[in-house]
Length: 333
Ligand code: ASP
Ligand code: CP
Image 1 (cartoon, rainbow, N blue to C red):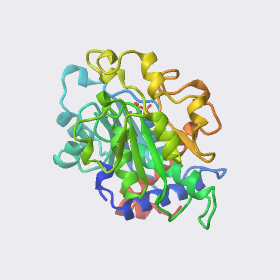
Image 2: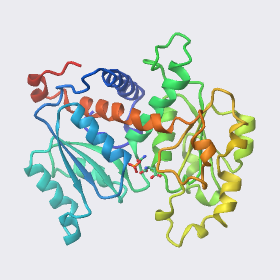
Image 3: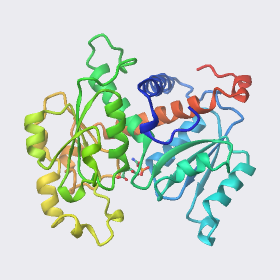
């Protein structure tokens, strides 16, 4: 693996290696000294053309915990506002000796272009491109689901469910699928790991061609929760910034959306007792998820953020640490 661009590129073995390495990384994070020497002397650039809180901070934390040098670049306040192209920005990063470039971009496909255009000699990690993909988000979601529903439940697996796939688990992904790279990344990865997925959304927020995705679809949240009994429910943010013409073009009113597709205390009660609730963040509290659901003890939303650091450490480690420079610095955990 040279780049991490899409969950569609990951074989089951790749996905399990990433998840199992994340578990090792997570274990190092409960030590008194959290910093590992693994990527000493390597440079990781965070290149963000779109806003981010969790992904940007956790990639930065992950790189620093592995002792890499980190350069943070955000398009706001950079020469992008003077019209500099992605190519010229990439050539600048190349000149600075970037070993890995973590990129978030509003254009679907920008990370793949960076990886394959020959402008850079660096590993490219997709931190979210347009409505296309968000692979580290899907990996941290799978890690969180596995830990709760395979690991913590026992049955022979260790605490993190190391080595196990997600066969037999049912995941409902609910809300604005149309604009969601999180949904696309998760459907692919969960399918690869053997889980069953149902997308629940109003017809206006399901993408054309969804029939070809490896999942079921439904317009009825109550029926999906009550009859299908998912083990995990992943709520998606209503992405108003991607709705040109305003959210009114996609659903009659926020109140109506909440009534049919919002997760609240009543709907939580329809779920099996062990079921967990995920949300990638940022949340629209009161729209797709009520405060009661977001703050309930079923919600693992804050844990998702913590797991994001371990997963991003694993991704950086697996993409960078096999190279010669890292070996000479010592790669052991
Ligand atoms: N933070 C996630 C993303 O950037 C989800 C969201 O924004 O709704 O895709
Ligand atoms: N989940 C997620 O990607 O959050 P940010 O947009 O804050 O990075």
